[in-house]
Amino acid sequence: KQFNFLILLVIFAAVRAEVCPVGILGPPFLSTSAKIDNPQSCEWYEDNSCCSASYNSTFVVKDNVWRDASDGCLSKVYLAYCGFCSPSSNIFISTNNRGELQYKICKNFCSDIYDACKDDKYGGSSQTVRERFSSSDDFCGAAFTNIINTGINSFTASGQCFDSGVAVQPLFTLIVYIAFILL
Image (cartoon, rainbow, N blue to C red; front, side):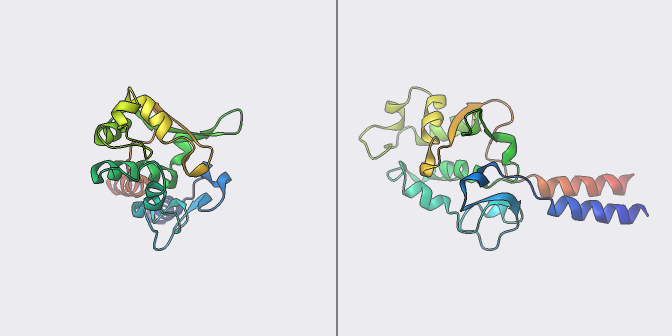
């Protein structure tokens, strides 16, 4: 009997869909997370994603203010754009009282992005990130706001924020499974 319950719990945890705040923007974003086949980017969310397979963070980045950025900078920026695909995005993306989406990026992750990008040109200008923004908070507040003309506002936070971690759902399933084995 306990084994049957365990099987049902593992199945439920593995396929549980989450509400995706970015879904209100329409494609390439989903209203609820789902398994996607052959994603163009953010592959670690393939089993449970808030983005359709057509979402391409590389295209978003290259077609944005990052066209002159170094590879080290771009790798961090790609991760930030993948936050929209996280099945846990309802933790760090919310709607304010004006109906605008708010994207909370963890201060430590924002600092990592800033450090990787600070000597790179920003927005097609001759200014570097460091010359244009006096702090990592200012940088992330501007750099990830209104991305791809979505009306998303971004800011840094210390809790309930995106820190570039991968989906925790598989880990949760494993922990539940181990707990029941040990009981």
